[in-house]
Each structure stands twice: as structure tokens, then as C-alpha cells.
Length: 193
Image 1 (cartoon, one colour):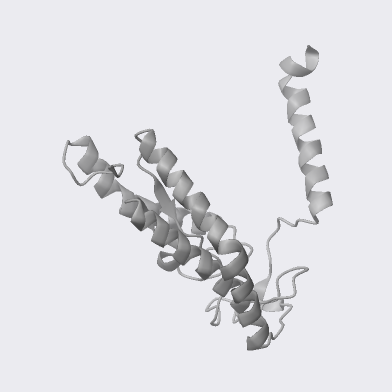
Image 2 (cartoon, rainbow, N blue to C red):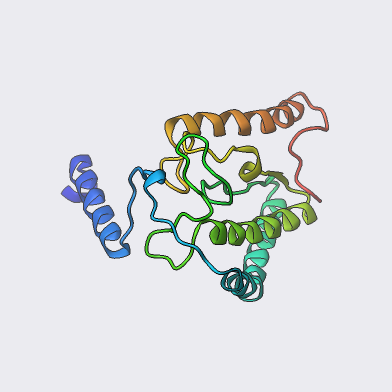
């Protein structure tokens, strides 16, 4: 009984479980210094092979899950909103640090920023296509948020400044739709039939 009702004990237990999960997964959740690398070059044929594997083995199941989410939302009168995943990785040089985002090696991975961005793009396009088919609204946050180390503290997590910028972008995309819905107009978020 004590465990169920003790906020302090539950907070400590959650921290303990979080630490165990991180240590098992080898996950790091800390600020990266992009300019320090490490950097790696990946042969274009290796990138193509990885893209083909994802396209044939992973994307079909991912697309089915997006379709199921849309159907479930529509069935229950929920207007789904999808957002693409921004990331610091991809081709180009970071203007703040001078780091080559495309050559940045991802921890414990045999790939670099260019390769993993191209893989993310496969998933992004699949999601946008399925969302469009079911009439769901999509925010292409991966395109709208600039790839700048000021917005990320690692390859996929936002800094405080990045979080503010994401909020501005999402707000600008959603508010006109929400206000249309609230005022009774037809510009709001409407679930597809």
C-alpha cells in the first residue's frame, strides 16, 4: 500500500527504472558538440542499399500503421494531425558550428547524417502520402524548422530555443484551422468521412 500512495517513493522508483533503461540501451541524452564530430564518409552504394532495405522491408508496415491511425481517428470523430520529424542531420554545413551535418557519424551506428536523413525522408514521404489519402492535416516540421545547431542539442532533440521555434511553427500552422473550427467555419480541423 505504501508504494501506491507515496509520491516520493514513486518518483525515486521512476528515476531508477529510467536509469536502468538508459544503461541497457546505451542511450545518451546529453548535449552534443557537433563541431567535434566524429565524422565518417559512407559510400553512395551503401546508402542506396540501406534505402532499398527500408523501402521494401519497413516502409510498407509503417504506411499501414499510419493508415490504421487515420482510420481509427476518423472512426472516432478525431481530426488527426501528423508532423514530420525534424533532425539536425542531413547534407550541409551548420552555420553556427561549421559542422558537416552529412558526414556526422551517429553514435554506435555504421552510418552518417546524410544516410540517416535520407532514411527519415522515406518515412516522411510515406506518412505525408497516407495522411493525404485519409484527409489528415500534416505539418512538415522537418522542412519548416531550419537545420541549425541552435535549435538542437543533439541530432533529434530540441534545445530551449528550438522548442520555442517549433511552438511558433506549429501554432502558425494550426491556429488558423482551430479558429475556423471554433467559429463554426469550414476551415477547421475536420475528420475525413
